[in-house]
Amino acid sequence: MINMKISNIGVSFQNKTVLKDISAVLKGGELTSIIGPNGTGKTTLIKSIARLIKSRGDVVLTDSHGNSLSKNSIAYVPQMSTTTTELSVFEMVLLGRVKDLTWKVEKHHIDAVTQMLKDLGLLSLSYFPFCKLSGGQRQLVTMAQALVSKPKVLLLDEPTSALDLRHQLQVLDIAQQYTKQTGAITLVVLHDLALVARYSDNILLLHDGKIVKKGLPKDVLDPNLLQEVYKVEVDVSVSNGGYTTVTPIRPIIPIRSSIVC
Image 1 (cartoon, rainbow, N blue to C red):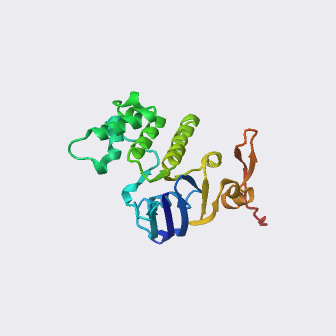
Image 2 (image 1 turned 135 degrees about the horizontal axis):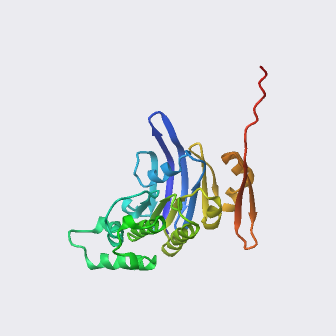
Image 3 (image 1 turned 135 degrees about the vertical axis):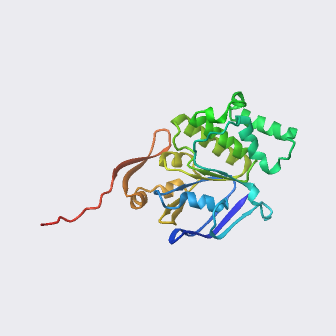
């Protein structure tokens, strides 16, 4: 089983501290959502784990025998952005194998990309320009690009933002299935707490650059805790189908004293 130990991660930009001594232990086969208000360090945390930004502390990734795994075991999927590349869908996914590519693209790379496109229902788009795809299709291709390298750790930064409901569920279904089938560790930044409740094995709740609580969805998605962190009154209930639902009701507006002139 893959294990990740995050110890005292801290990040500062100029004079501002974004993350303060973040520590956690994550296990293979589990999808962990990172939640919290805007500006609390969610994206910064997964970029630190991916070693895309400078940070204090340690991230140690080991296999079932205790052997250390390299940075190449990690795949990071950034927030969806517009791109003008004329590369085809096939070429975009092939870039996910870049660490193994040589001047000649070998058959096993071609086969891996073909199978990934088939698994994600994208095979018919193989030679379609990536820049001409819809937002949902682009996100699926980006997921394929990450997964074709068979990462031990999958880091997803707001993968459902700007997607319709169908594509939101499709992207998270893919992430969840990959996590369970391969025993990978998946960390995903999400804002929609209903999706968090639906897909998470564990949740990291961040606030002011610190972990407020880590645990099972039923423990972290506590109305009082969410109200304290998000400053929003919420209702947490269980649907007839057995799904936890989180419904925002109203923002909590601080009461200001009257000013008498």
